[in-house]
Length: 341
Ligand code: NDP
Ligand code: MG
Ligand code: MG
Image 1 (tube, protein in one colour):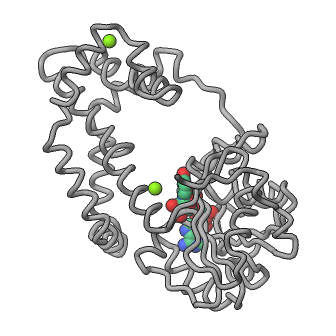
Image 2 (tube, helix red, strand yellow):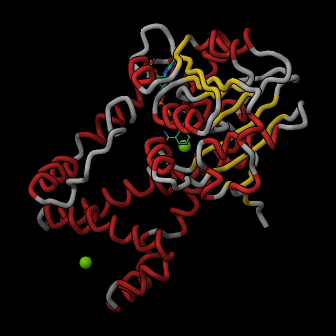
């Protein structure tokens, strides 16, 4: 079985002699920097000249400098700029300022696993990946709650890589909830698969197909929106709380029989084959190659896909309905600003 680490397995004072450079102050960056700082770790934030995040980091009371200077001051470097710019930031700001015995730390293994960053042999390379958006990592910490996380060691030259990564995980609040040990490969491939096949890609596609099927058959867009998108949250909440069993228990017998007898007809063997193909493209590096080229070309397909998604009728219907009904009015939080996507 998998090892899970909690607060008792970690000691933040392991990092007492370290300065941690947090590169980037976006979703993850702001959360890691603030949580570590409040856990008593010496933190310096590294941001490029003219960075739009600079004022936020300074207003939060943190020391801000350039990425290169942050790395040269630090012995523990946490790379929290977007995955698509990490190789560039590594080349220009990190590599020239890394010293033997330093730790290079990631929140996602993409650049290491697909060899976009090839660190020297004399540094530790680790990953602490909270399984949550950054603003929740921060909010949980502030509420004395934890955020589950993954931990992996890619390269251990000091012999302390595990212990140091655990200290970091504790500093950002992950060991309060539990930290699972994994590998860079497993984290990257399962993360990409999950977001493509099920979470982001699969679920939006399922919703759109359901919506279109109803609307094309003459049902009202508003009703289709409620049935295929809005109610999804209620179903997912039940699954989150108690697995499929709790969901099946809570819906009507009619819904349960209908779902059990029809679900596998909708998401059938061909969908399963498509999933396997998608996983293969992740495993053989094809997806990542495509994504790197897409970025080098200025994101033409990405922009097109985004535009098409934005213009799907379901978006306008949803916007109208969310304005008319009260459920979407959530309390705004301090961190729900534009600098925190
Ligand atoms: P963000 O997109 O939120 O990072 C934005 C930050 O990076 C800003 O401070 C921005 O500053 C800075 N930045 C952007 N481009 C550059 C550049 N070229 N040079 C220097 N700084 C730059 O990133 P995330 O927090 O989403 O992701 C960070 C890492 O965490 C990734 O590896 C991601 O996979 C991982 N992760 C993310 C999760 C999430 O929910 N977001 C969840 C788990 C892991 P500026 O104002 O200068 O643009
Ligand atoms: Mg991901
Ligand atoms: Mg119903």
